[in-house]
Image 1 (cartoon, one colour):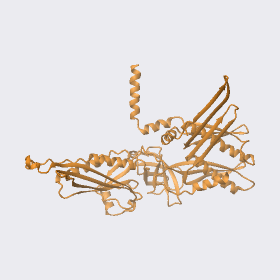
Image 2 (tube, each protein chain N blue to C red):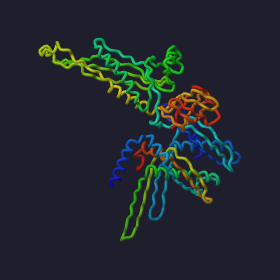
Image 3 (cartoon, one colour):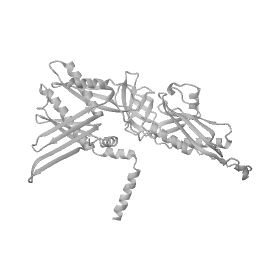
Image 4 (cartoon, rainbow over the protein chains, first blue to last red):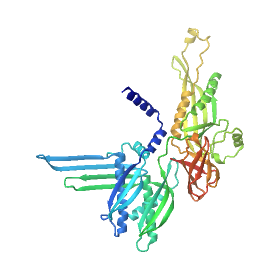
Length: 141
Length: 369
């Protein structure tokens, strides 16, 4: 117990003196934030399959970007479940997000089967820390 | 969608070279457009616009989304992405047909409002600092101020955002330091304190005077030290800020007529001691505020076959692996990105990432973080 206390105190002290550069170096070693988005080609606007394909790519990227924003800033979730006589008659779930994302890069854009596109985006952990510091109240709108 | 994207991208690409405090970010973008019939030209334009849009989305995107799920399993899902960014230029890395689409890949130089405010120190030359002492102020006050100034300059050396070079023997900065050739530059070389071409300079003066604030019965006299310094950008000659501070030291506090009553007139007066440390601590804080978020710039001192020597090193916070952006305004607004291979305390060795354009000596390089 005593050892744990001393160790915790050391860690706390070390944390206090850690410079911003050290923090940045540590963040650079962390894994990036990654998000995946999917979009169907079939429901996209466009006269030709190629146009639908391009729109699907864009939609998949936007979906991944949204997931990224949720991971960075969090999301507002509200739900309501109503019961009658012990049985559920209404169940609603809302979620919303609003955030600025910087430095996101495309890791992959892959067609899955013939109709769906998958976009994988990621952003470095130190960028996330910078975004959160700059817009701490961006989420929860 | 396509005309909108094109207009947006055209707007983005037309933004000028306003680089005042902005940081830089090099981003890549890929754009695709369907080739309708044999209209390659339109497809290329659309693909380029798409690539710029893609690059801009990497600078900054505002994402909004809302979802609603209910018992029927119905899903209402809305997402929007508003892209915003400014570019000072771009290069096309690749363009060509890929299947039924035209593909353009670009490398764009984005301007961001953010500039890293830590981990770097800019050069700050301390130039002429004149001291003017009002008539009637005792010699020991003058001596105190002279000593306080020396200590104060020493105190500025502890700044985290800047490193100072004491050049008080050189005259005040005026105009553009790069082109200032005079006997004064000769003097600078003789004393081995060359002005930092890509840094900043501070010059100004101290005024010491006695101020009376007597009441009906009281004799109140203070020694006031007023400091007025101007911070200038050596590269552009621009005036960045003016720092004005003052410090009051109590001198005399007596009641009229009482000195003679209690026999103090014959006794030697206790002289006030002027300590300028608090004044220079404020100046140091002001300088930290002004300079912390300024981009770190360097001059290219040597350039040969893609190998460069820059005027900043470890003492400026430069590390191996850092990237600098070199803008070449005389070469059609071209730019080149260089990577630091090695750093010594005051210089660093870098190499260009592309063969062209070549970088001349005295080009300005800006740290990208």
